[in-house]
Image (cartoon, rainbow, N blue to C red; front, side, top):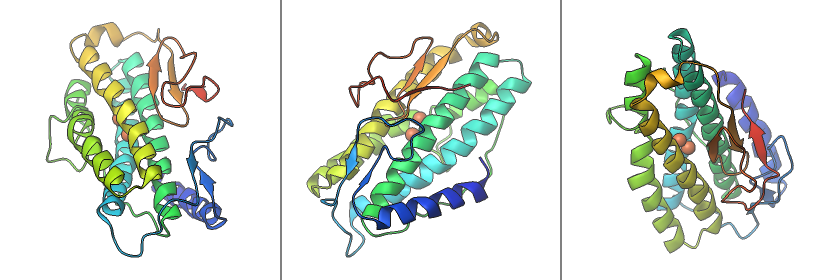
Length: 232
Ligand SMILES: [Fe+2]
Ligand SMILES: [Fe+2]
């Protein structure tokens, strides 16, 4: 996705937020049950640690989305068809997290801010390492870091601030990043098994949870199968 179109989308989303109570599900192509960011979301009168964490997560997810699309192109170029499709599915998941975080920031009366950097694309094997946190100097720290450190700490802080909407958007992201880290770990050791285009990829459009081969009958975070999208 081009950066300009991402900003356009965010402007539209800000208008929606101004109407009051909003839903994490409102931008999904399907209409899953509401995961509400409701009017109880605390409006930030000053920068709280959770607002800072939301902005950091919004920036991280924005960059992850762009990076994984670049990794998908590289995998395609190198003949790893299923890895390219997986990167596209994960890019879609990160896009969902980006938009979820943005809605919570907007509900707090603040404008989401990101800084998109040009992804450093290497070979597919090296890109997988990076995606797992192999290069922590990158702006994007990787799935393992998000799973083990970033989101657990953000959830703890959001709970301390009684910011339920922030807890929810971080919970969704944590569930999906855990799957991403696991998938990358499996693939890294079996790169050649992922050269053919033989797998299907599915994403839950509310939580970003990501599945290979079979769509879930129920997305674990939202307890519904109605918000499942196949990523082509
Ligand atoms: Fe994410
Ligand atoms: Fe991820």
